[in-house]
Amino acid sequence: MKNFKEKLALVPTKPGSYQMKNKDGVIIYVGKAKNLKNRLKSYFTGTATGKTRLLVEDIDDFEYIVTSSELESLILEITLIKKYNPKYNILLKDDKTYPYIELTNDKYPTLKVVRNTKRKKNKNHLYGPYPNVGAARKTVYMLNRIYPLRKCNQLKKEVCLYYHIHECLGYCAIPIAQEKIDSMKKEIISFLKGDAEIVTKKLEEEMHKASENLNFERALELKKMLEDVHTTLVRQKIDLNKNYNFDLVNFYHDKNYLSMEIFFIRDGLLFGRHNEIIQTMLDPISEVIEYLIKFYEQGVLLPKELYIPIELDQSLMESYFQIKVVQPQKGKLKNLVDLARENAKEHLEAQEETLKQDEEKKQEALEELAHLLGVKQVSRMESFDNSHLFGTFYVGAMVVFEDFLPRKEEYRKYKISMDVKDDLSAMREVLYRRYYKVLMENLKKPDVIVMDGGKTQIAVAKEILQSLGLSIPIIGLVKDQSHKTSYIMNENYEILNVSKNSNLFLFLTRIQEEVHRFAISYHRNMKAKGTLSSLLDLVPGVGEVRKKQLLKHFGSLKKMKSASREELAEVVGKEVAENLFSYLKEL
Image (cartoon, rainbow, N blue to C red; front, side, top):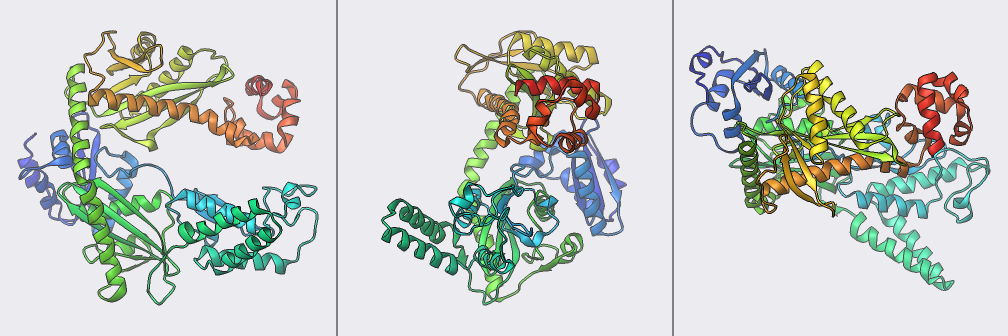
């Protein structure tokens, strides 16, 4: 660890944001402080443990920016975190967003599960979040069976199967009174807000009718729906005497771990909860606020009110989030805040030993890999794989791991040139595009590149790095005839002495499995969606603008497939038309 005594003596006692850098000048941590001098000194005095110790050992320099207020320092901190994505700042568990149920505000409404709430203009028609996606889907399925809402994305010219099985009113061909639609919407909204009485009554009536008609299969299905209402879909009632709508936050900090607990209160019901444990640095209070900012920016709708414990800065959070922030001092709401803390504590105590052991295993594996490669430290790893459709139409994929934790926001997919017909050519193109961009944009380089294969894959990686003048260690995970990882090879084609039972072998194969999953999921998702828009995403040279032009011009996949090269070229140009024509012939 470097001695920063002289530099620390010059740091002011004002608020601001500070940035820690490693030996390569890369920003590895961004923080904020009311008093910059005191905060920065705290990193280099006393005995650091856990994540803080790893950070301190990695620090080669630091910088700071003075601000006029703590709010300014918070805004600056978050801005710099978004820009640099530092290694040691909070990393949420994954990029998964909570699903919501949307009752669309169309003339003929539909009911569906949505995740990307940022694109929704009218947030008032979203109900959730649902921590359990299965519950959300069951709810939508059940309500769509009970209420004959519109089922198609666009109205057809004539009634479809849903009309004949009484699950749609036939909006495309039959005039429907607005009062009937409004009545359905009112009952559905009432249920989504927690009042199950009307839906339960409807299910019971339908169940008895089916039973009387000896339709026992239908009666059994309705009975199962009733059970879902009572077990999964009816939330825990909280005795608040009011139909409150807010999120409630609390936390518990112990040693190097921070346990977060968030309750979603909707119409006086405990609609759902979120909990997560993260490793923390020196200032858990600041990290709670950073966590909440990332949590709500990730896709959970920010509530109109947020209830927090007394330890957090109410004024700061109110100014940043621009919503009402409450710190209850007594009564039922204070008890609820305390309950959230107890849940956070119990969650941490139940998992703390497991988390500690897992961190120790990761650290040992990182040290073992660094030793085998003859480098000082290994943290960031980038791994590659590709997938194809019908033996052609290759796509590539890259996953990024830091300290064996996935950085999903840095995963990348690559469309590959149409003339590529084999795995090695596909890999050569992906690697070149990735590391040319790293070089040109001065992006973070990995400490090691993990290839899914042996000599041929490693050779391709070496070829690309040498052509770009880059020096990055490479390893290959070699599979046997059963397609199971057999051993690990370095860039000199030497087999590394790594036991199959070791933590290092286990963590590396997890990376291998993840990049394989990510690569094939691209094609699978496109085929599963089955839409023309999704299928066009696979064609090199077809982006959002050209996709819209094609959809507007041809209207259907059938018309596009029957088009000539010349007709396609009129819309997207000759070069892209060649790619598109070849692609469409394979579908």
